Length: 375
Image (cartoon, rainbow, N blue to C red):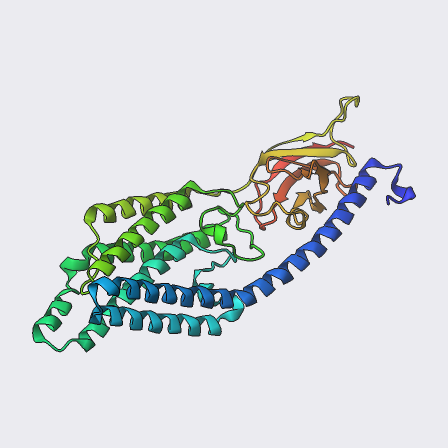
């Protein structure tokens, strides 16, 4: 499909192919965003199904265990609390159905599920459910001694471990959001918005690769939540007595996660610029019309590997903005890459010393690197 008028020029042919790829990639990206919006609109129904299924599982478990131990006020309180909680979640899902239903508070500004918010939300749900069960038990008890025991179950000495972990996870969720926002504003972190949130986001980085910090934080927190839920089932008349050893394990895991979040990212940098020489070409200085190879790091932000985002990259050569051509290779793209970019020097650039600067798909600018353009 290459026009015959461009066949004589390798640079013009490459630019025409790149423009065609960019146009097709943007069409595919628009359809993907539309599909993501439709999935988000339907997600709230899935959250409702999951929530009420959990209530049904709790009811069956209570009925099966009641066959041997008998029915108690605590079982009634647990079921009523589950129904009330599911009702509140259903209402929230209905109100935020365009933003993912009940998962709306867990979705970050980059349209990905936030690991810190998910962990904090899990602890909040467990704590609220526990307090609601205790309140319903208190309303259903008639004896003075039984009521006193329930009130003592809310003492700080009983739930100090749980409250510590809850406060820490909520603080980390707020601090991570603040840290990411500040680092993005100061161009120390590159963030690219995702098409839609995925469940795997809580275990991966923005590029979809498994993240050690996220995985260990989720696993340790999940184990601690399960332990606390079992303690609640065994002793429904008090806050789960989370052992300090397990609480400290969660604290260490949270510190590792927070350190990893603060250490990730970095500003892209241009290290060198050289003339791109084809095999058989003579040695020569950089002139207008020549290709230059920009070497550095961080040119492709995590999550920006799709062709529509790669096509947003621009190289500023002097006062001229040059779009980075897309060069397909082996199911991906040889250009642009995270460490190298190849662009032509436009004829509009005046000979002399000019500065080269890369603008990534996230809108972050690199340092300015001077080069000499010969006449």
